[in-house]
Image 1 (spheres, chains in turn purple, orange):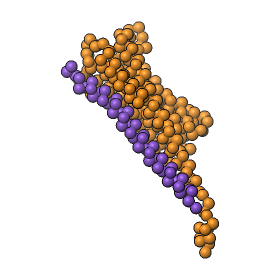
Image 2 (tube, one colour):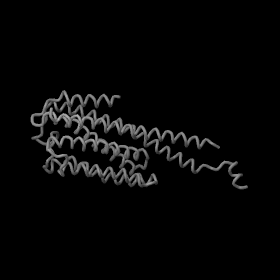
Image 3 (cartoon, helix red, strand yellow):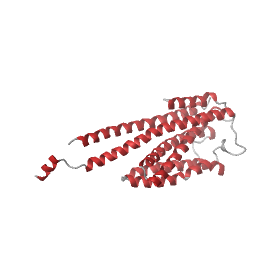
Image 4 (cartoon, one colour):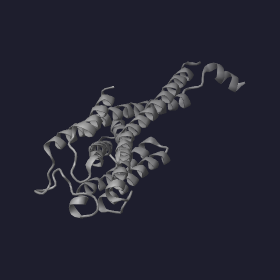
Length: 46
Length: 229
């Protein structure tokens, strides 16, 4: 098991890549939803 | 949740169920994550190509949303594939990187699609942005088949293909089962992420429309009277 750390790192990369990307998408989605609410509010105002 | 379970199961099968390889031993197990990521990347870039062609033919925004979403997810998978490749290359070859045909074409593919994303960020007008990026996306996709055939056409440091690689290519049936499971898991996870990314693009389009509506809405009578006086 001398190269186990490389194997572990590769497995972690798979997790990390998708996990970090999913967080980024969720964060951008949340910002856009806030922006939509703000614009709708602005359009409702007389 | 299902995506996380699949990644976990795919990882477990690759680490503990697949048999040990004779020459590389445990480090060969990176193969299951590495090939899985490339499969997911090729699927994503294939979808991006469909989106790019779809936009140029129909000019319907949903094709543009598919194009950009699939490119971004494809770049994520490509980045993961390059990193896992380096983590496999160091213990197997003694080096992190070499300018072998397969590695070089992969790196060019990554650069092309990163350029696609940068290009999109530079163009303001939505229609022009979609058309130019679709044309560039189709051009970038030309490298994808080259990546696939590169280790068949030119022999280098990268191993020859074990699937669809001719009469000499073979894989232990248990390894093949684990590989198929891992590939299916990665493609499923990629599709799950892609669906979320597509929703994000649709929201972005909604924001653009609302901004235009807010900027072009008529001035109310009270404001107009105040302006006249």
